[in-house]
Length: 126
Image (cartoon, rainbow, N blue to C red; front, side):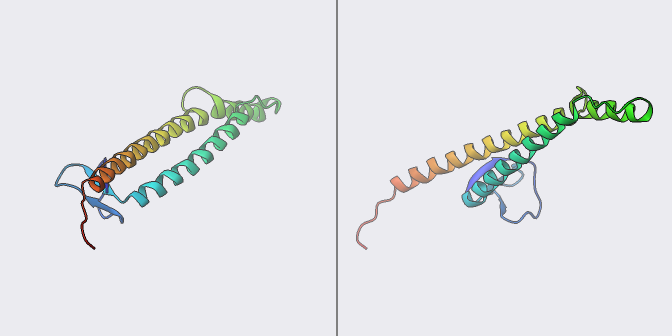
């Protein structure tokens, strides 16, 4: 199993504690690989949402009055700087990428340890 630093997760199926109070957990490589794949799919969805939010960021000529305010809000929400959908989704996409990198690193570590353990096993006879 590969270890990854994280906050304690009580009663999460598939996770086991790897030390008392260490703030780490162990995950079966198959679960880590599946999680990596699902995070990639989520990244694709977030990317699509960013593209759709960029469309909101375009100026919408709805006229004046309330309709004009709605058009301005849509543009600000979609592509504005502070708290816009694009900014939030982009930050979320970066967090997903960070998680994927951490999982990939843990899987590589697991593979190295597994390979080293396999190289140290001598079997004789049958």
